[in-house]
Length: 155
Image (cartoon, rainbow, N blue to C red; front, side, top):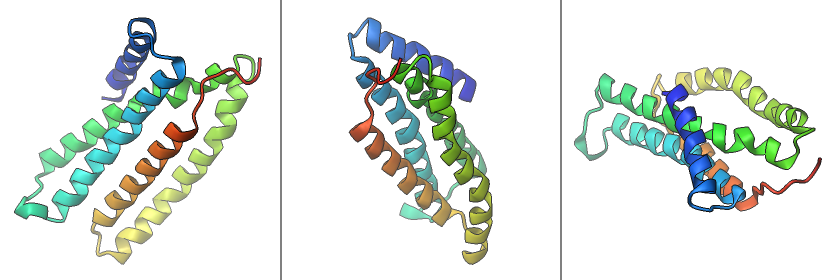
């Protein structure tokens, strides 16, 4: 799902710019919105269904399908944030991408311990974790769309 999603995202972003005449900033915002909004919706569905909202019971196959959708959508970041550093600077893009990725690495490395702790506190119920992921994804969605600009800053 991730490979297909990232290839589709690249093609979609190119089409937004070349065929639909989107500004690069707007095209990146659309792609990153899919990358953040898709997983947020999938995790919200997991959160609600695992809590038994509406009297619905979540089956394993449905949960797996929601995770696959989340991964496929998240791959849209390949045409959003993933390319954004190249928009800002061709010469310094690797430094910009690597420097900003440090925060994601720290969150990812420490997140597994936090997840274990949260599961132990909640009787191994994933619902609070799904809710937290929804909050983080939505905060990222708002921040990205508020502040991202693809205009060249450095050479």
